[in-house]
Length: 428
Image 1 (cartoon, rainbow, N blue to C red):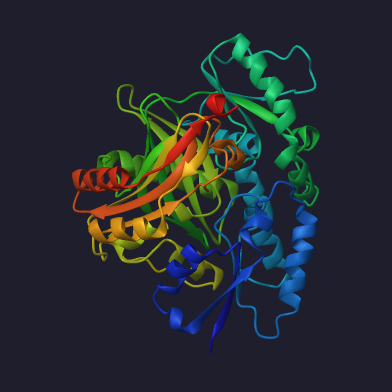
Image 2 (cartoon, one colour):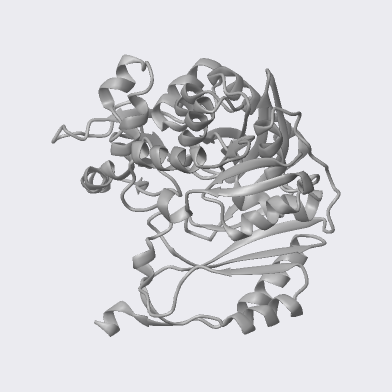
């Protein structure tokens, strides 16, 4: 019998990955709302839930699972909708407890030591300053965000006040809709008082960045992969994700153990997750950056190329209340990476690579896949900065024998892709 799987914000690339999973001949995947509806500029969680429920109620066959792999509001809509339809999912409170950046830190304090100094900030206080127990450099960020939006790196008092003024104009974007979700829960007083449009400050971690991916089911917390997150030189913007990790096994084991404590501590179950860390090899300090109650779609093709099956498989198994399926080292390549080709200043896009040019590059460089992220005739700033520091031009996947092979294939792709721009100052 065919099982109907509804995927919030399903797009073509992820549909292809889902359709290649083992046993998918018995699954039928359905888009539940579009990506633009879910990630648009004006989000209303109650309206989105009503629209999604209308689509589900109009479906005349069985609804066997509702899943998603995107950030807010998808990460909270999945447990809400699954509860309404009697389907397996994580508990909403555990999801919010993990995704609310300040609440998550409070919970981490109870079970681990590997977190940075942090504090909640009062945006209504005119003379807010850096709390006495913290030291620069720090990050100021909203308690709810995605893709590092609204995050500001701060090195002194002047930067601190500038970032606070920016936050006052930014936190409502997702914080307002987040309030509708918080209202569904019995909150600790401090979380209830601060509300969704709030921000926090935490000391900046140093070192190399990594992401642990795993799942939790019926008290069992398992890790199935560690991915390197490598930034551009002198920039917090990501250059690439690389799998498998180059970390020594004892450091990977350390991250895995900390991850199990955190996930068990918040009570997250029936869910995939990914946790981002910084490891400083000089001081041998581990710092937990962020907990996400979903797997990373950005890693999906990497796992498929190396392990033979994407991490979507784990999400699907959990949603169907089955033990997750994961196969190690069953893919065609030993190593895989997702690269982010970026520009670090705004500009008018006057040319992007054509479909024919892209197809030619993908054919000439085996194990590659290219996705253009900008449109000709648009300003880069119209698409929004990635983490406030750069503008994405393309995502380039490369798979190969080792890291050197990945880098060689990426450079060959970049050399063959022609973008052209008019600088904003010149075009004005």
